[in-house]
Length: 552
RNA sequence: UGCCGAAUGGUGUAAUGGCAGCACAAGCGGCUCUGACCCGCUUAGUCUAGGUUCGAGUCCUAGUUCGGCAACCA
Image (cartoon, rainbow, N blue to C red; front, side):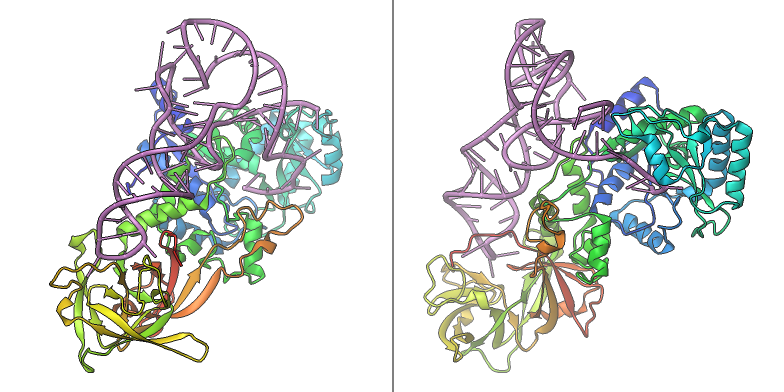
């Protein structure tokens, strides 16, 4: 998977044109998270576009924490966000910024607007202003403060800053057009009083800039040439432009693209928080969560996430991608890059009756069937093995791959064996297979070259490691859990999204580092959990192998 | 019913006035010491109506449908 798989999109077309005409000479972008939650796969698309575009054009991308609302934000999220971006493989270098570092400048800019008669202090309450602003089809009316003198506005604004007023008593408004068909242009609030301690500036300020005022100024100060955001900000763009024009400062430009949507996934911050708070998942990094930390723990790779972003592209229309697309990309990556191992999820015992009691052999099994250069590993073999319960069937049809009485199958990398007898418990469940092996078939092939249709995986019972394995499935039972107006999204939670089992694994798996990914052959892709230790092995199933039709 | 935006197979996208292509999904077949991977084949698309043009998915006009916008959130 290539490092920069940025192809082209409508924004890159604009950049190409700007560069060609000389309108711009460099590409500077920014990723501006608000530190009020964990990053999820939707953010990954923005990160991919912001950092990836800068990379493609040899420009730079700033990481800027948009911390203009002290009530919502918390230091806790800052570190997590930095970690997730790095995990995706991006580096902001020296360019780490904070909106809160620009509060002095923003305050001066607000005063500049007041002095130009382009901003005023407004005493209307939230509800009163709502009335004045009116509805889209009707022009609004002018708030009383609109005609206040510049001197009085300066005085009031300074007293807002000094903390003379309670929260909500006044706001500073841009003086634009109360009759604009765009509601955002009907004298939007640009500064509000909030007597809250800021994680960065402490109690220095009790007034904080609103997003629309702050964001364009942040972009301008940093010389951002291409400021990309999601579609819902489209109607904010005239305000973005108005502020920069009135301030007569560097004019960054905003471009909007559509959000990432995936079937069987809910990305709303509020709902994710609900899942965590109500204990419906095991925290923000639960492997079922679409958060980057959850996906990391699940075993998804940053390369696959970026490839998804490249594949879904960047357009101006809403779309919803099928989760199968992502799964396919993940499998492509994992198939290519993960080492093979053997693990039995639902074991039944196999006894090789003609194999010596005390013998242990070690077989060399390839780490990757298509990559000889990755070498082999040694897997111990002995008289008693574990195999998958689904690899035995009574009176199996011809197509069945596995043991049935009298049919020879290959124990992967070891020997050919035949099942002679099946032992069942009182309920008819298979408890044990009595088999014989062909000592001439060492390594898995018989000297006479006879064909064996089936190859199954196995683990030596004596050497097997018991591991907790968490089998994850989709978190929801329907494609769009938000699609039913009558029901809550939680009504569609999949009760089987997590199944914990004890599996029998080949011994080397106990000693791998947390986060190491494997393909357990014929079973799926697995990742050693964060909490995995040799004493308490713990694996998460990332995905099963691509589904195939079973003839059972 | 104001403003802004968008419409290409089931899904995600490509085409920059010149052969509608790719991927996923679905179906059929082949290969295989993983029912994986890999390989071959098949199904299936330019929202509608006009117009410009030798030629329109692309440009123009009108319509239809869908999405977004009325926090002192971002």
